[in-house]
Length: 327
Image (cartoon, rainbow, N blue to C red; front, side):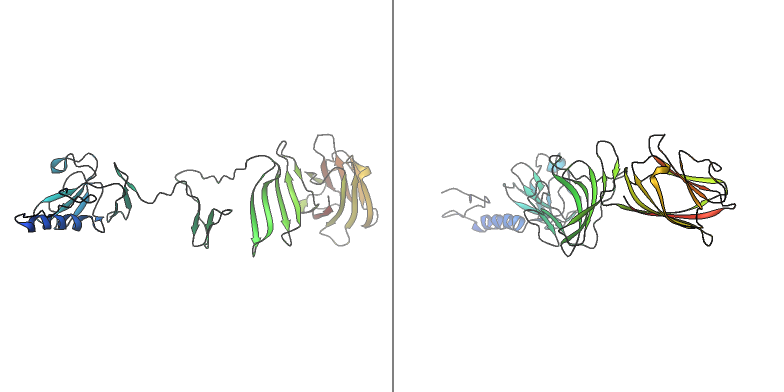
């Protein structure tokens, strides 16, 4: 029969042993130290100057003084002197100083709870095999650590999906990201089943497509004999219905812009008030290019990106409203 127990090395009381209480008390001291192990600290490298009875520490790495050579051991002060217990693999300790839970791995005390390489994590809700990170909260904060901050969504291949999906009662309503290709797209749905692609940005060129058509609206002040011009946002060939009006009674027009963009031939007047007050041209306008007394419109394709021109020849400054539907 050995002199100590196999797990905690508690001393056995031997047959015909004198002063059995000494052996018994030594065993109680060990049990008192390691049962429900809670320590004041895990980093001290020298014994406290005025420890209290029952004070317990994990001896920190590189300890000196009376703790020299006892790194990682459990030091317990009984009111008179320090005693030490060598931990065994798998023992756990709660550290009062920082609230950490530690585990002895056979050579050192390490964090018992390691948030690395987890299979799943649910915060106030349940994670599952698809949603391996699940959070139920009023908000989620991702912030910087002294500089910028970047959220990465990575997919395996171009044909896969990397996106953000917005839902109403678990039914999709809007999604943006690279879905099924490396083009960036924004799409919406009224029922979670049928989606309409609103915008697509080509990954290879940055060109913007409006697959489902668009509405264009702008209010702009144009001085007398002045011009407002912009890059044409609709498709080529065009299929646009355009409304233009001025902030003066009786000046408005509805017209169509159709076909491959070229110039005056793209315009068709549906109605205009006053009659004949809108004229069409090809190429850039400079403020006095077109006829006076009305509004002149033009398409210029000579500079690469087609541009649309509005020339005010009404005699005074006016705010013009331009609105389109189509694509």
